[in-house]
Image 1 (cartoon, rainbow, N blue to C red):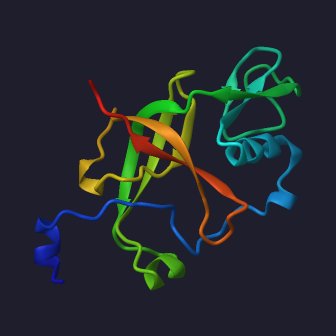
Image 2: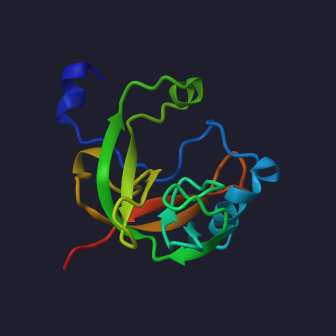
Length: 162
């Protein structure tokens, strides 16, 4: 397909997470990250929350950046949010993405509804990249990775607006 005709054509939606890219080794993740991955395996989006000040934080850390407490809990959140930012990748750098011709694909920053500035990086599935927009409502769903079904990835799907 020529570059000219690519511009006029609608891209295909992502229907699953990318294949061939590095995944976490679940037996090696630190304790302060384990609850997140256990949650995805249970079909829940669990976010670390400071037991002292109540701040949600993602990525998980051993210490609260707000109050320096080392105490935290894993809280199941709704998984609802909106697209805060995104990029459509058309020229892949990773060899597996080139070999499997997995472009274009999206990388989205999703802001979760539970707290301002609580964001997670993921993909939006079942929507052409050109149709993704800032402030678009989405919700989490969970998909086993093709390369390692033991790793369940949180991805997002659009929510119909009423």
